[in-house]
Length: 205
Image 1 (tube, rainbow, N blue to C red):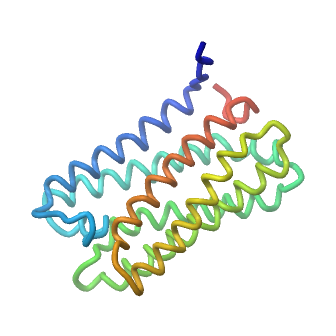
Image 2 (image 1 turned 120 degrees about the horizontal axis):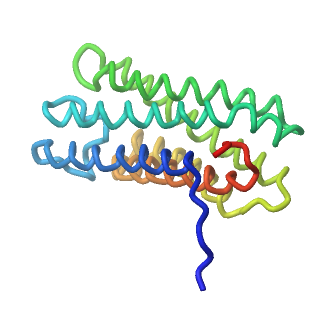
């Protein structure tokens, strides 16, 4: 018999938020003229109407979802990870910067006069994604006895994917495809992290 999956209100909102982000990005890709998954990055969706509308809405929903998670987890995480309290505070700051970067990607399109600003923000975003997924995964893996290590392993894979992404965008092909894979890995990691942390009662209800 399959074990029932506990779904808290927090997890429901996170799944809805990140799921909506994915759906809106798919719609944006469908509306973008001749969108090539192998050649065009996600950011290109923000350059042409009407795909730009769905692209912007998707990222704003993702930023709102991550902000919601932080609002629910901050106090509980500091209590749960008391041996790494300072590390969690730093990660909290990094996540807030990452959220600002997501919004920045929307504000500054990847073409025209703002292209350089966009690239700098996007690079910062993925670097922070790699750092936080590895760091938080390591903290949970080290401090929680009953922790599901597979969630941490997925975080490590996401970080490795960011490194591969940087290399491919700079020197090779398939960078845009790896970028999308990295975003998917990060979103799944976030959902599984929230799911795994439910049993420690740090989200409330």
